[in-house]
Length: 362
Image 1 (cartoon, rainbow, N blue to C red):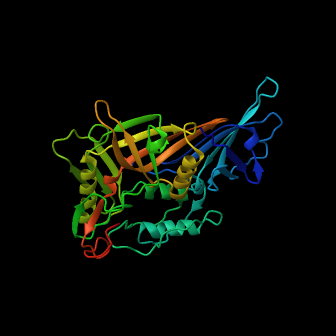
Image 2: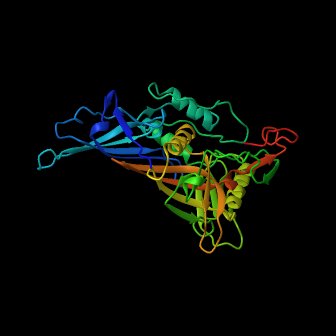
Image 3: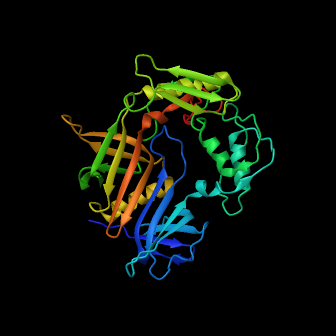
């Protein structure tokens, strides 16, 4: 049995020894949810005013004894619980990750930029304290073109607008669209089972299937094209509405068709819960390194036995998760999507999926 000992530092000051509880999140609940950034909350003893010097914008660093990887958040609020009982005062600190933090910075001007990547690059260059690496902003035909300009707004509003689009994964240039099982090696970042011999031990698994839990009538809307709609026939219809950045009707309709097909696949989604107690240090270190290095998007095997069935192993993509810790115990929840929703490529495209090469990715 193992225990994760978390460390909490604000700026250069350690709050580990007085932290009573800690929770943080990353990613999203499913592939159908918009990424909104992560949050963290921790409560500390404050009987002598230990938290009085914490200010908005201070850097929160969360680490542990098993790995050198850390998670970074930024203070957005401190609340003080001043109790009548002697020595019972506490303070609760709330933080957000980089996406949440940059939402507080203003952006203005009417810079004309051709696509979403250029806009994100422009946004990041405005942020002196928060300037992570970003993709090459060169225009790519068919993906995330934006026909309007920046308005005087906050960076957060602009990023949320970009995150609300569905242009991130799919590419269309008029060639044949193909759905195939993943050709990637059958490798995973970590594995789960109901016994230590099969990997990390989980204590609860919630299985979810589309058509029952998720929508399958897709409506994508853009300024240039309007709304394109596709519904899978023979299935109960639930709306899936999203804004997009396409300005070509053919591209947007192809994107709409893609999501309708993805939503109709009978593939398993899952919510998995586990704690640090049944695990070994090595298993926990492997998990923490995989999640911290890849964030959401890492892969995992899960072995489970459905009622009346036999042991089954599926491969999932980690979409997000939460962590809640108190002294002596840490509980995790992971939100998992099937790999099939990432198994689309464009056949014989001049940019992606070129035949007789190894370019069969995005």
